[in-house]
Length: 142
Image: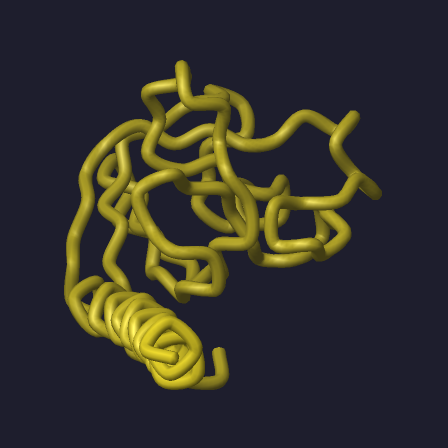
């Protein structure tokens, strides 16, 4: 008799505890994502920038978007996908606003890889590389 009573009460109790633990871990992960985005606003990175090769035009990016050399986007490993940043060429002080929609290969030490359109606006297409300042912008329509 005791065994059947314990099964009747323990099984639903264990299910409730398991559901509660799952909900807690899910809510923590959502909270962590929101906090990481908030913490990046105002963040500033310095480093080397380059631009994508034409062979990537038309391919899918890490965000799922199709890469387009004429758009103002970039690849960056240090910031969340969807982050808007102002990239400033430290050699000529020209800047451009781009959205992070891709990742750079982990072995590459550059801060950002830009589209040709963004690189042209920054004025470093001939040199291929330049030193940049990357500033995270608040969410908005750019």
